[in-house]
Length: 170
Image 1: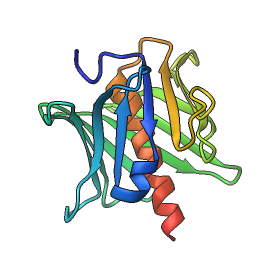
Image 2: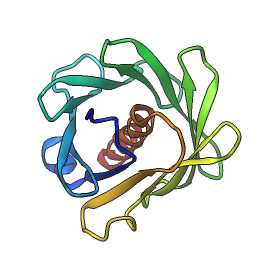
Image 3: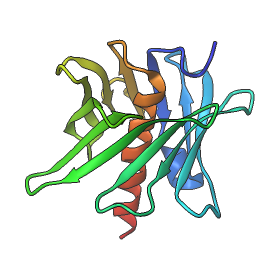
Image 4: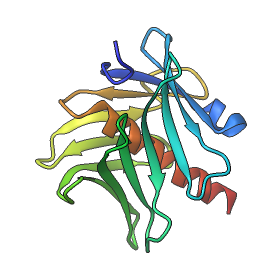
């Protein structure tokens, strides 16, 4: 099975702070792959590497953007989506657009505390991200409850993590 063939993921966040790596596991705690931040890249980039060491996707921060913006690439290096964040007075607003610029997903909830939902364009919940899904410290769960593409869901989670980490450094 591919890293993106699952509906429930356990993310080891502790690794991110130590090695700039998120370990991605299934609900039985078996490692499926990693999201690894590239060093010495011209732009900030995280690669999805499966358990066999093969690159199966990537998230790249756009270098020139008024607000945080990310591009999502599949294993053939084709851009499949954009993840954007609009800064508003009350809070943050994240969404995902397909490669043609059409909004396909929205993020809703408490992003800082890792308690949020990802909804499709009709407002139906397709995934949830929560520390409560797995009561293990330094881990959080991602559960896809709809038909959302796991690459887009995990790329959204990674993009939010990248932005959160960047804010913590400033």
